[in-house]
Amino acid sequence: MSSRKELPFADPEVVGMSATRLQRIQPAMQRYVDEGLIPGAVTMVARHGKIVHFEACGYKEVARQDPMQTDTIFRVASMTKPIVSLALMMLYEEGRFQLNDPLAKFLPAFSRMEVMTDNGKGGWTTAPAKRQINIRHLLTHTAGFASEHLEDFAGCSNKSYKEIVQPWDRSGQIGDFVDRMAQAPLLFEPGEKWHYSRATCVVGRLVEVISGQNLRDFLQERIFDPLGMEDTHFFLPTEKLPRFAASYKPGENNKIVLDDPDSKDSFFLNQESEFYVGSGGLVSTAADYFRFAEMLRRGGSTESERIASRKTIELMTQNHIGNRYVWLSGAGYGFGLGFGVMLDQGTAHKIISNGSYSWGGMYCTYWWNDPVEQLFGMMLTQVRPYDHLNIRADMEVLATQAIDD
Image (cartoon, rainbow, N blue to C red; front, side):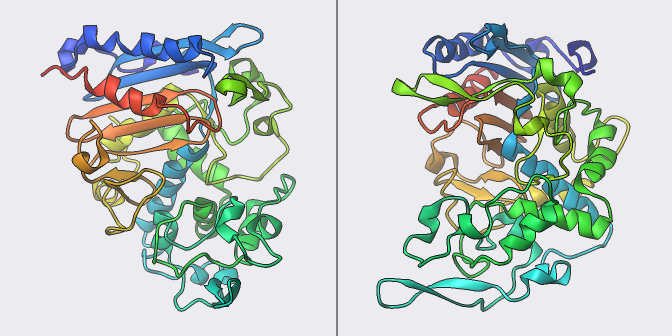
């Protein structure tokens, strides 16, 4: 089991950080707990690969006053996407595909896509797509896929994305879900815009088709075991349930109320399922995800083993979408192959450096690597939705302002 002593700790001053300034993190997180906006949080900061802050506050389950611990297991949701994106790029390194290869080369169901088109009468119709979805489109969220939000399909007659795609058949395979995605019309021509979606489910399915392994086994063998990510799973083993956090949602005045329990009733405890959701199915700990992010910071390697090429990590963490607007992150951001990428600090009004790459999850989890400062930061809690909270941006500031060299 992952523990503090197995992680690389250092005194803050040794790596150019201020211990005094790092002490600002805990009370800032505690204020969110005291105001009833989050149940609790785990925060971590590392520089040059050495952890200088790793603390927990609040509760993993509020009604029982069950304290949050640094080894608490969280639904990391879309923080799954960078891991699954790397898995596919590991197959790229083996010469299995090129980024401009059409998706239909591997998944024929996507060979004849339809695109939503204005019918000129205040409604919508569909027309054949003018170009094929390619693998790069999947990794950059420019394929044109819709999402769960009905507003994506405002006015489009009788078939919504939810009706065609969204039903989750947890007794089935992720390939069934991906096949349904191929039946839904695209919002726009592939490559035209950036739009967040379940595209990484298709990425995960590509990993399965190209490698011949299911996604869980591929990740376990090629990423989790080599990195020592012992607490990262698609479905949590029952014996680890006591470390699993409950999830909450905002209620009246945004005070949290229980949403998904820390019990066997949670979807994430469905041990019989093989429904491996590449876009957001993993649970993990701060220590485990640090190991993944640290491997990226080191250019794809650990002290003893290379997971991916340094050149592949460089490629993945570059902006691949030109000036297309990443509406989820806002102005000043681009998008790489599985990561959001900071392009312009001044435009984004952010303290992290240009070239920083990151992503978060829908339960209000977040991490980033700042290559300029060699700084890693993470904040994990369990609240959805979290649009009313500044906690992720606060953590960026609290970690970065502690740099002292």
